Length: 478
Image (cartoon, rainbow, N blue to C red):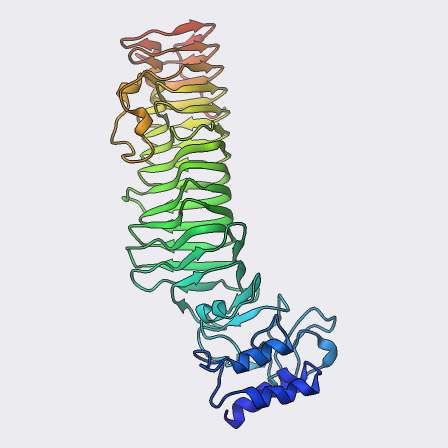
């Protein structure tokens, strides 16, 4: 070990206040051992560090208790909460202090300017104890981390400081991050920006375990998914934005809890914003713009709830598909400027309530032989407001391969109840019965101006009762 590197280790050792441990450190450290770059081949140095502090495998990270003091300038907290650098200048270019958000945190500087920090996230992950926090310097203080990170256990990845986000950019053909953690454990990602340009891999892949993504941005230019959650995975998202020219989030036989997730698909691309295939959980808040489909969803065993989401400028705003035994509940969506606002496929059990569908180029809501309740919605501006069709009329190419086995055979499916909706300003029909279906149209208020029809029967009939028909235009919004 060079004289320089020896001097850099002295402050971290003195912080332990254990004289005998100091002797162990100098006796056990191998020649040329240096935590900068790859860890030394001889593990004795890290074993000695573990004796000093089993939760801090790299002594240079700093003191865990400020009462022992430090040589040089110390930038930790005086109340015992923080660690700090004992390197005389606070560890940041220009002498500005760095402040620890977690006293057990492992620090990463991908610019390799700070020799007392890990030079890559992967290196920090390899030496992280269970449930560790890894803090990454953002570009400016650090640099973009160009690497594919594999997470095998529970931990937290976050940006160091309160300024710009730390950036992880995937190498070509690889994911930005892959989580394969034991069931019951959680990986938390907070305030990270991901960039994917590989075109052949998802940006964030969840093989197993629970992944929480908060306050983050995913910039994914790939034919694959921005986030891909496999069977047995669990995904929680809060206040996160995805920009992509492919597709947004896919979860297959998983559990999701998505809050305020925004997904933008570039104009002219045919991706799917959010694909939930036989998945349970909830989606609330946020928006989806563009793509072939905004949300494609089928429930697992326990049910799926989608509420308070805005979907616009997609081929189909929302498609509800058959899946497991659970029911799909849709509430208070805002679906605007889509080719078709909402489609319910054959074999699906769903309730759609308090949703506003505006400016659809074709159908506002289209139901194909499903067991569905359409109640208390507003559909304004469409060729056909609410269209009821038999299962056989469902276009098979809508979402090929997406849990559509139960739709085969052209079965008529369940019974659809359309009640207490307002449908206005349609160009052909407010409600259209297009073929032999089972259902009721009850207590709706319909506005069919010009040559449009309030209730059109195109080869089929349903029970009708207490509907109000106006042949005028409704001023909207009112």
